[in-house]
Image (cartoon, rainbow, N blue to C red):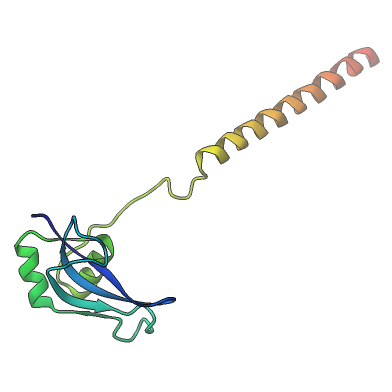
Length: 129
């Protein structure tokens, strides 16, 4: 049985509140879980107690092979329980595939227009001399 330490959403519409739970990877997000080990209230200010985690139980489940999701790994890193490796995505700031195609087509059209202008002005200069 593969276990995850993940978030389960609670709270009402537009008022999110999350439980940090230990769950089987096959169970739904808000469905069955094994144990609740914390909570996260994103509506509280960042300097307040947004995240509450039972460190002892989290360490127990980590030693039993449970893997945290990315968001929970951030919380555990802030609490000093585990270390989260830095991620690098150098292509994040690049435009999408279709936008890159449009930019390439636009550059080609501009180059063609510049070449046409240069060709049109070149015979006029030769005739003048």
